Amino acid sequence: MITSNVYHTKDGRVFINVGVLIQLRYLYIAVGRDDLIDTLTGGNQSERIKYRDEIDAVVTEWTKTKTTNEVVNTIRKTDVPSYLSLMMFIIIYN
Image (cartoon, rainbow, N blue to C red; front, side, top):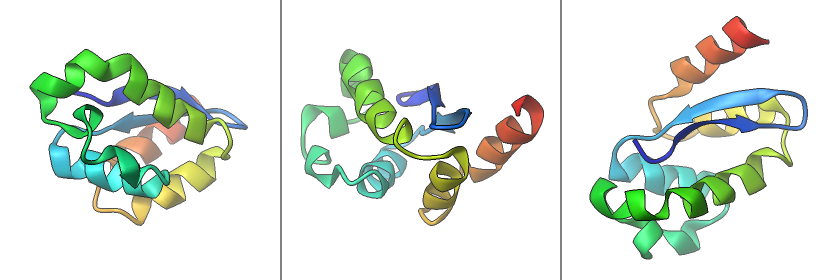
């Protein structure tokens, strides 16, 4: 899954797991990078895997400026269904 990683926040870490293309598009919008939707980093899984590091850098750039709660609350407002995974990670590891 691209993107799927543990990302550092201002006050901890958060797990974000985006599996399908529409979820990635919602994530890009949430982090203020909708300009990436129509690029190679916004393509399907087989294309995105080539840009894993670049995508992770975009997400990291955003998460490190937010608290864990800010990241979770922003993601919750999208249709990315990984919200429960985010909350489980926070409960287990914080």
